[in-house]
Length: 372
Ligand code: SF4
Image 1 (cartoon, rainbow, N blue to C red):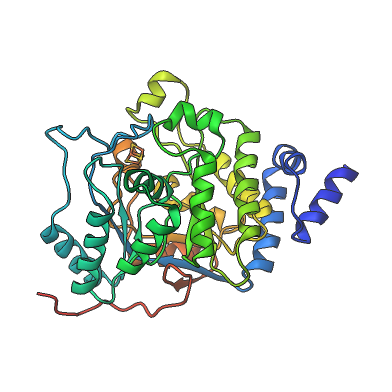
Image 2: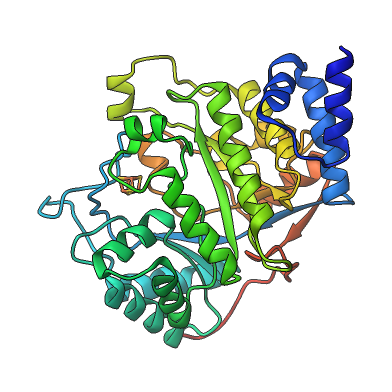
């Protein structure tokens, strides 16, 4: 018990825990103890009672992807009858809807499409920014950047600089899954490995591009893999240049198994375990002592579980997310609106704070701009 007390004090001092120390807390503390410790750290990192939320819209640039991740029901091969590339008119319509709802950011997810290169993505970003100067582009992710670098025979830096010049505002932490290659090879062997994922983020941090980090857990990984993942994220954050945005937030979400090849190859009980989610979120807050914000993914676990997470280390509920295709195609079906998410935050005992991707406070007001 002495040893556990010493580790708890180390965590409260925001010191970096070793893998063994974090595993010990994760496996030996009760859920209420883990939540208490995480909430104490939340109070140091994000003082006060505000909880962030945002409105953004997921638009899939394409559903064609060569990665063929075993947990993804969304991707299609290029000549599939359901294969698509989103048209300019579709973007326009979706972005106008977003503005009307009070949002200003789109989450553009790419997919590894053999025919889409740097020119196509840069052209798309430029067109969108020219039409909607206030629009924020939270777009692509390390797997797409790695794919583009190989396709164009350019460095990660050259690709990111070109995309930033075209209008990229921030880079989502998509495609992290579990940053341990023995796991990645079995679930998503067609995209970049963990070292490459981290390398892309390292370059993004040097360019002061805001990024986020994620984890998809609850498939074939062990508890040690989860902690190893968190430690890799934390150690990369420690490398970022002084004053750079780095990882602005961390978001864990559970594997959504329905009809996935992964659940066929590795059969098991993949039903949502809310307690497990809360425990993972709390240990994330404890280990990631150098990351500002921890977000509960209400979209995949539901609002009641996300509300509990606000007492276990989370200080953000993320977006009402107008569209999300990868998780919704694998069973997640939670929905809410601005009123629903702000009510959920208040019910949990906190004050809602409408924010942007950099976590700056924004005024929530429905837009009435005329883009017709
Ligand atoms: S999860 Fe993303 S990278 Fe993997 S197959 Fe689906 S679209 Fe492609």
